[in-house]
Amino acid sequence: MPMVLQPGELNFMYPENGDAVLKISANTTIVLACPGQNITFDSSTIYRNVTSASCVSGSNLNVDSKTFAWENITCDGTLSRMAKVTDNKCENNGTEIEIGFQLTQDFFSRVFLICFDENAQRALYSKVSISGAINKRNIVTNPGWVQTQDIFSIKNPNSYYNRITQRQTINTLLGLPGNSTMYIKDNSNYFLSRGHITAKADNFYPAQQQASFFLLNVAPQWQTCNANNWQTVEISVRDYAEAKRVDLLQWTGVYGLATLPHSKTGQLVQLYLYTQNNTKALPVPELYWKIAYEPIKQKGIVLIVVNNPYLETYQRICEDIADKITWINWDRNNQIKGFAYACTVDSFRKVVSYFPELTVQGVLL
Image 1: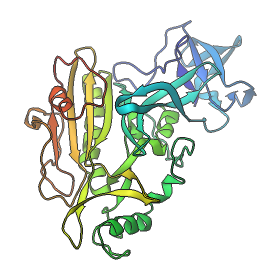
Image 2 (image 1 turned 90 degrees about the vertical axis):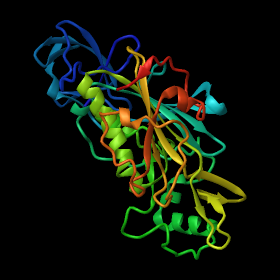
Image 3 (image 1 turned 180 degrees about the vertical axis):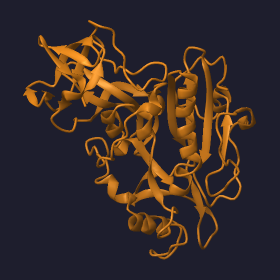
């Protein structure tokens, strides 16, 4: 399916007011794009990947003075997603990376943005817009992961998420036998998954969803937490956008380093998936956090999940206001699912300062 963009800035167009269908007024001009592929009309290919179209009536569009039904307009292959390093620096001297599609030589259509810490080889945070129509998206199958070796300094980062490999790495850090299943277990969710920063389901169009599968957009996340309280956080923010019929801005990131006790000394050891050549990278975060922000009313909330199912007690980094939030139903005192809490944006910033300045006039209730 081609992407539908606004002329000029080539921003994505979305249905309004929670509708499932994008409604366009008659004679309105739009842009259709199939980055890296050709556009096909009634099974006949035109050899360009971007073209203008105007709405005629119903689901019919006028392209090159010919009328075509929307359902007969396709791309002739999978769209080419890209990770593009910008000329900008982000917080903590991070590298700003746009994930999206190169439409023409001059235009790049961004799906979401990542602030990447090259020293730690991990994303500090991502930023994406959550459409009020997000729950009307068409869900597509997961593509393969893109490793972006030109940005990662370690080779084949995907391989370090392999369960056997991560078990050996974690066990070595903790002084355990390489094949011990004390922490990384078989046939269970006790392993470190590729935890999306911007979730696949945060994106409306199929091509946008596929663009979330860059390894730049993940961090090691215990699957017990990922599949439970963190998933609840992700779903709840999307449900809020739908229920309130608002478009939200969302920043999602990681903080700190998860630890486990050394098997012999009992001292807490910071966890990494890469420990080679006197270098540690792919750190396991202590926390996953998400800021949901309504830009018109300037209201926001920070939702936090502890990324460690073995941690029996924890210390909050900001005052917990979760009791005030009625639109999320999480099991926030469950250790295995990931302890969870909520904070105001201002109190959170006192500890975690590496996200853009926001004018916040109240809590997103």
